[in-house]
Image (spheres, rainbow, N blue to C red):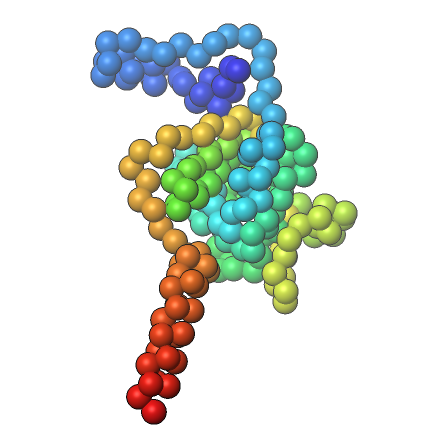
Length: 198
């Protein structure tokens, strides 16, 4: 399948750098293509509790922000649209402001234990809750959390990266799940030891 992600981002400058570094450049395949999110992407996105969002400011400066929430807070609306609630934060509104100037965004989603990453590019729009309507009801929002705006992203393309150089990292919940059996066995042995020493 032609990769719209690579084709969109492989500029003449990128191809020139490929040629300079490796002796040849990689020309993306031509022809119309529209990448659609499949089951693998949908499952991966739904299992994430955080991602990184890159936007472009009015003067061309890139800005990257971490977004976090419960698993599934970045919702897959259909095979070409994502959305998430923008919660009350530090009131800088850098991402939201940037999107009003340039709707192009990039999302970077990581699964550190599995050493997988998914990169997505698209066009974003910022919707006030009053205009988000039924869309807001579809989103996973933590209890007692105020959604100040909804960000909807129309996907242009995506790309999976190789696991090379991804250092496995684990959340507290993942560590607890991985060590549950060992902790139960330790408690059992400590109980047995205490019983024998009584």
